[in-house]
Structure formats: structure tokens, C-alpha cells
Figure 1 (cartoon, one colour):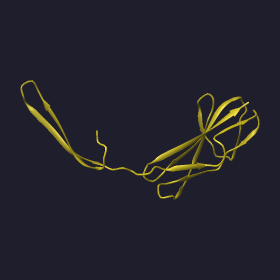
Figure 2 (cartoon, helix red, strand yellow):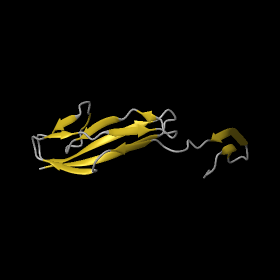
Figure 3 (cartoon, one colour):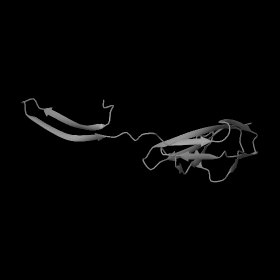
Figure 4 (spheres, rainbow, N blue to C red):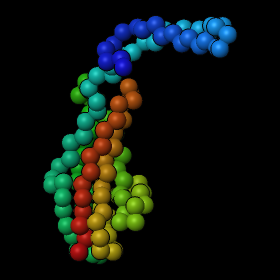
Length: 122
């Protein structure tokens, strides 16, 4: 297992029953991306509402490792496990159950993060 940044020589060797050998070597460069993206969400991470009541989506901000703001994608996971994007600032849950509001960011380096709010609909 490789646990540190660096350039490593990897060699594979195969030997058949007659002692014939073949090998393949290549260089592997390992880099650590660094600090992952982060998300800040205003408000509580567990909330409850009545069925048919509008729920205000909390404000979420995403940041890359340098502290620059990056876009946040927002989704809802229904009790049936179906996931759909959210584009409005409110959502009305018509059925009782447990829903999740998922906030997702991905920075230019490919580092991603998510934060989830659980909403119980009574």
C-alpha cells in the first residue's frame, strides 16, 4: 500500500511452468489533492414540518480548499429513495415520512463534499 506522495516504480513479473519470464514496469505518480471542499449550512440539520406545509431550504455555501466560494447543488431524497434536484427556495412535502435535503459541492480539483439535512414530515 502506498501512503505517501511520490513517484514509484511498479513492476509485474509473470513466470510460466517452463521458467519463461515476462515483466512489465511503469512509473506511478501519487499526489494528494489536499483539503477537500466544504459546505456551510445555516440552521439545524434535523427539522420537522407538517404535511402540506412549505419548507424553506436553508442557505448553503460551498468553498474550495483556498476558501473561494463554489456552487452548491441541492437535491431532495424522498422516502421512496428517489432523488431529485431542487431549484426553488422552498419545497412542499405532501406525504408523511422522512426526507433528506442533500447539499453537494465539487471543486476544480475534483474534491467533493456533501451535507444532509433530515426533514421529518408529520
